[in-house]
Length: 113
Image 1 (cartoon, rainbow, N blue to C red):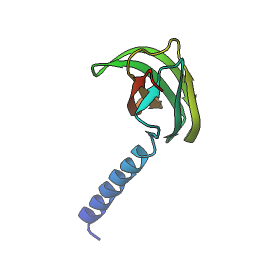
Image 2: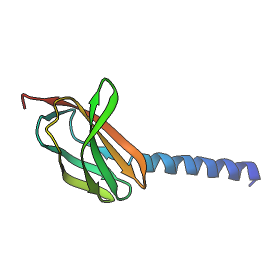
Image 3: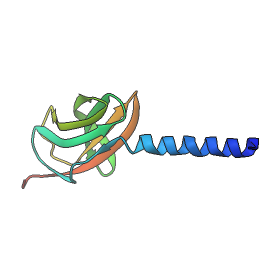
């Protein structure tokens, strides 16, 4: 095998590993949440232990931190976050692992749920 082929195989393998680890960090709940002092995110998955933070989210801008919780590596079921105040606008959930943002999802807040 030539050095070029080995180098290309190594780069391809590293790229695949990066894609695989990125897909292990995700939120699986819907798009709309009720306006409540407790946010229920359902099940989420993380490549390693970390944290999920909920922020106000208006006009594409991240606002005030409303609440957070620690998460474990792997599937985290029934993730609920107690908020400092009931959200009156949309929110964004931001997952961090090892200090790096690995996933985020914005949610519409509904008074009618």
